Amino acid sequence: MQFQGQILKMTSFDAQPIQYYLNLSGDLIHMNELLGKELTIKHTGFQCVNCGKNKPIYRMGFCKSCFFESPYASDTIIRPELSTAHLGVGERDLEVEKQIQLQPHTVYLAYTGDVKVGVTRSSQIPTRWIDQGATFALPIARTENRYEAGMIEVALKDHLPDKTNWRKMLQDDFEGEIDLADFQQKIKEYFPEDFQKFYSEGENVSKFDYPYEKPEKVTSFTLDKKPEFTGKLVGIKGQYLSFEGGDFINVRGHEGYVIELDVKN
Ligand SMILES: [Zn+2]
Image (cartoon, rainbow, N blue to C red):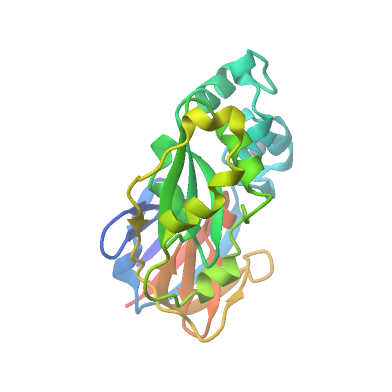
């Protein structure tokens, strides 16, 4: 079987185990069915997720000029606390920023090898957690907009990480229970006074089951360094494909890359 097209992040469905679909120019390839098979990935070009041009991808699927111009790549995507749409102040395109920022957001704790704090649009749950490779996740605040959630995260990230350590996430062989509710009690005192009304306690902890087993070692590669790669797919966690021998590729990190994918039967 051969497929080709532009990579977007994998689509996932929360099941036991989680079901993953590789998104190649709109074709959804069911990756769980390819576990145990030999895949060849060949980099053939680029297609910016914004302008569609065959220009090198700079970050997040955008070519360099789109990354610095598109409202979908604004600073507030990475740093929610910089959001200003609630004040009627735009950064790149106020109408787009209003759509992104002025909607319910959730502040959560997630276990991705460490317990971390994060922010997501509530509509992105549980996708956001699966994309990060979280084993457990627990909402701790529900806000009306992105700015409020960002301010809560800023206060809490002095006390716990806000980034996923992908290596730890992939090496994780945690078995048992992490008590995120207990963790929430420990950091409760750092919850910012001004945003207390958004605080939420006693929500359900989500648990995720990936088609994945801890590898002997973790080595990640990119298509920039290795434009053609062949390996046997043995697992999927977060947005990473795991190959026999400990090679990993971050699919989300290759949004906008155009590839050919060959599956050997
Ligand atoms: Zn572009």
